[in-house]
Length: 64
Image (cartoon, rainbow, N blue to C red; front, side, top):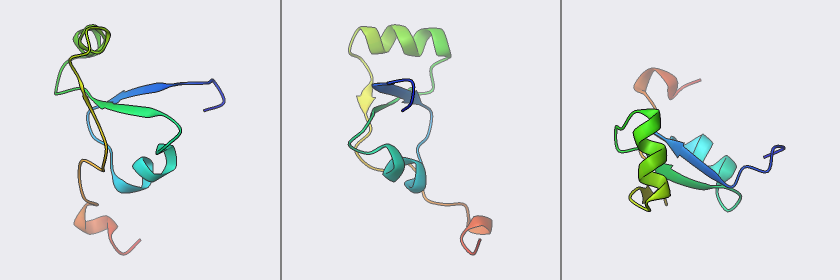
C-alpha cells in the first residue's frame, strides 16, 4: 500500500490477507495462470475479482 498498488493478482487469498487489503486494493484470482499469462488476462479483463477469501486456514494453523 505504501507503493500505491491498486490491483493484486494472486493464486489464493486467505482470510487475514483478504481483510487486510479489502476496500484498499482490488484483488484478482490468477486462475492458475503463470505470471505473464495472468498479467495479460488482467489487461484483457479476463480475471475474476476476489470478493471473499478463497480458502480457509490450514488445520495446523487454526490454533496459532
